[in-house]
Length: 155
Image (cartoon, rainbow, N blue to C red; front, side, top):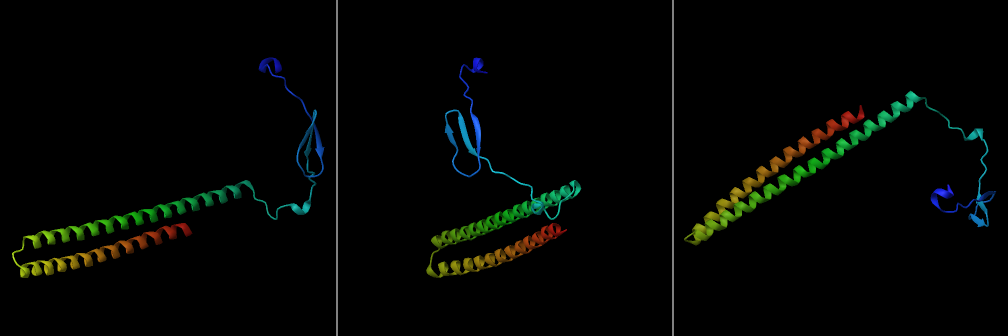
């Protein structure tokens, strides 16, 4: 090996040490902690599994993990859906207010401005009620989907 690597390979003699402590190198001797293990019948597991039992348990854990992942993914999608619907609903209200401001700017009198504002405020109120109903239906659907996943998980 030395003629291949062109490097001298240093050899050490291992000297086991019975007590824990740092490893020491002295010349060509390495003193290292070497714990002794003895057979202890009381250290046996209370129950051992055969290969089939191990496979079944592993499969159950894997399927449980997959169900957990499905549930987490579903929750993420539910969150995203609610964020998206809330965002679009807010934009709808903002657009309605912009239209109101444009019409008010073109109004010829204070009475006409007041009428426009009342009409738009009523429209905005109806839109918000519709939004609230939409969100309630989505939340109910989310709860139903979550219950289905949890039922599957229990089986």
